[in-house]
Every structure is written in C-alpha cells, then in structure tokens.
Image (tube, rainbow, N blue to C red; front, side, top):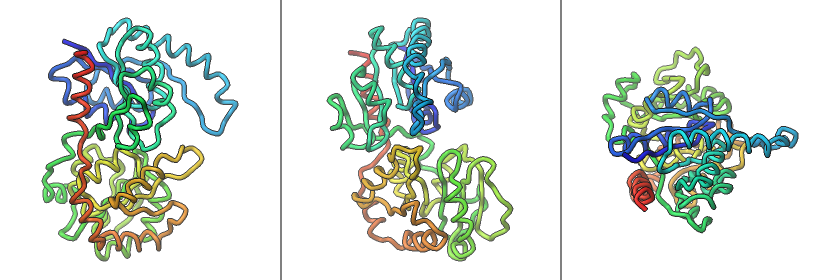
Amino acid sequence: MKKIMFCGGGSAGHVIPNIALIEELKQNYETCYIGTSAIEESICRANGVEFYKFDAVKFVRGKILCNLAIPYRLFKSIGQAGKILDKVKPDLIFCKGGYVSIPPAFAAKKRGIPVLTHESDISAGLANKLIAGRCQKVLTSFPSTAGKFDNGVFTGTPMRKNLFNRDREQSKKLFGLDSRPTLIVFGGGSGSKIINDNLRAAILEICRSYNVLHVCGKGNAVEAKISGYKQIEFADDMGAVYACADAAVARCGSNSANELIALKIPTLFIPLQNSRSRGDQVKNAEYLFKEGLCRVLCEKQLTPQTLKDEVFKLFKDKNLKTALAASTVECGNKRILNEITACIKA
C-alpha cells in the first residue's frame, strides 16, 4: 500500500485541512504526519494519526536579530526531516504551507520523492513561495492564486465531511439555543480579544433579537447571565456550531471563510490586522467582498456600535443571501484527492 506523508503546522489552520484529507485517504493509503511539537502533534495524536517529530525554523516578522541563525538552523532541520523520510520512505509528501513544510519539502526533493503543496490564501505565503519549485503542483483555494505559480492548480479548500448535512434542531438543542435566529461568533483557534470585548459590550442589544453562540477561545469565557448568549471556549465539532448559524461574525482565515461560504452562511468578516500578520486575511476579505459573498468590517473601525449595526445589516442583507445561494464555492476534497492519486500513479 502506498504511503502519503502530510506536513504543515504552527496553527490549526495548517493541520485540520490535512486531517480532512487523511480521513478520506486512509482506506486506500497508509498515511502519516511529519511536524513539530506545536499544535500539529496534539491534533494528530487526538485523531490517531502516526506522527514523526522534528525541529523546524520559524521566520519572525519584524525582528531581524531573531532571524540571523535561520540558515544554520534550516540546514539542521532539513537533515532531521531527511532522516525521517529515509526511515518512513513515503511515496508522496503533501504540504499545507507554513514554516513546518519547508524542511520536509527540501528533503523530499533531494530524495526524488514527489511533493504537492496547498496554498489557502489569496496571497501566497512565504513557505509555499520557497517550496513551489520543488513541488509537482501548487494547489490553491482561490482561482486567482493558481495563476501566480507556473505549476498552480485551483482545487478549492480541504474540508472535513462532518461540517455538512448536520441536523439544525439537534445542534441548537445541544447548545441550549431557542427558536430565534442564531449568530455564531468566533475569532480563530485561540479566540480574538478585540472581537470578544466588542461583542460583549454590544451583547445585550444583539440578544434582544437573536441568539448568539460565541466560540471565545480557551480561557476567555466570562460570567454572563444574558438570555440567548451562549459561550463555549473551544468547539471540537465545528459542524454542530455551523448547523446553528443563520449568520456569522468571524476572522477571515481562508479555511473558515471558505467553509462559511460553502455552507451558505451570511458572514461579517473582521480580518486580522497587526504587525505579526502578512495581511493575508485582509486580502482574502477584499476578494470575497468583491465577489459579493460577505460583508466586511475593518478591525480599526470595530466598536460595539459598529459591530451591532453591522450584525443587524447582515441579517437583513438579501443581496448577500442571493449571492451565497448562487455561489460555486464548495469543498475541495474531491479535486485535491484526484491530484494526489494522479501524482502517486505518475
């Protein structure tokens, strides 16, 4: 049986899409994962995925001194990854971007092991720019991104099957929500303080009309006895959360953005804007807004009042609902699996 090794890490956004693909491939292929002791290890362990660990090198934006040792440490990381590849002997490496993907991709190329990578965002990340020439193909979530690579192919975003076709009433009952329309709010894997704070400042007025299911991040729940306001720190099953949603407020990471649109959930995106970000969320949001598939609120304009006003506009936006109904954004698993199969058979 052919073996596929996945890599990508540093954030759940690089790992969960790989898990989605592993779930579909494991019947016909051996699968395993190479990564660091960051979040990818715990997610793989929780999902029963065979895991191999090495040390990767992360570029720190805005801190030149922290990056001076990168060439030496990268050489060492490629060596570590190479030893794992020699032991496991995978037939294909599938990368999901992020700094964790660089050493395995370099080591695989040296050994003649084919590599595929997937770029989630409109603007390609540094890791995928560095490894693109070592890959058979660069698969992309957005059509326009594929054109930025000589070997780019648009496939869409990997998504877990359990996000779709969920029972709405059962999910609302799970979270203790009443029959009113429900707004879901989340700010990424660890939550977003600025979204949490502004939502809670406006929550009384919003909950006069709607339920709010707030995924606030681990350790971020607060005491709040407000009718219709439900907090959970982390969602093990985002499919159940999505099933409750009549509308959403979220960051604009590519994975969750494409999931929300594929599920036809009207969404107000508040893209991350700070010095630690390369601006990928802003560009994702700009693209989706131009396509008529979302509403956008700039983080610098976020206040309790602007958030409340945008939420009420979101629920009443008939043009957005029409555009979502006609959207062709869908789960990209089938196209990605076809590319993986073709690459292994080549």
